[in-house]
Amino acid sequence: MAEAISVSGGVEGAADKVMSFETGKLAGLADGAVVGRLGDTMVLVTATASRRVREGADFFPLTVDIEEKMYAAGKIPGSFFRREARAGEQAILTCRLADRPLRPAFPDGFRNEVHIVGTIIGADQENPYDVLAINAASAALSISPIPFDGPIGATRIAYSADGEWIPHPTYEEVTDSAFEMVVAGRLLDDGDVAVMMVEA
Image 1 (cartoon, rainbow, N blue to C red):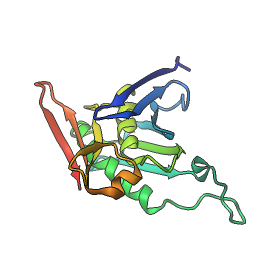
Image 2 (cartoon, rainbow, N blue to C red; image 1 turned 90 degrees about the vertical axis):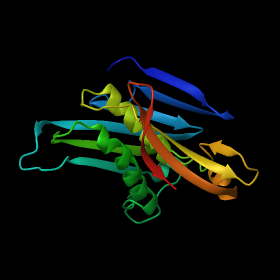
Image 3 (cartoon, rainbow, N blue to C red; image 1 turned 120 degrees about the vertical axis):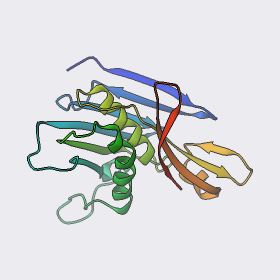
């Protein structure tokens, strides 16, 4: 396995928040694997692609899955079989949220199956994992051999009752805010930013 590489930086506009990304420790057999962290919320995102073109496909076969594990919040399922439940509403919405900005960044005519899996490995019940998963997925695709015109950057911003924009707000900050939205985009060669998704 390759040597672990980690990068981190403060969130601009929020001095107490740090976002970090690490690769090289987990999921070494995936084409690309990155652990994203914001506070104590952690998401492992893997990206894999088939080596062969999918026969008869007239669309790009991209699958995005988010797996919420109860152990991420320090809980053990209480059912008889001790199994994880199927994907919840938040996980399904996060899959769609990640798919929207990532899909246009693949080349036209690319027909190999691509599977992106985000596994929530830590949930601090304070920081949402959805935007973190988009950024980690973009990083995983960027370090993989899969053709991808990225990276894609995503952020959630909330407009507080005090009239200030809060980047990467906590659940509490979102509840107390008047408005929130998620924006994703990528930097173009000429320095402009191509906005690929706005979700309000």
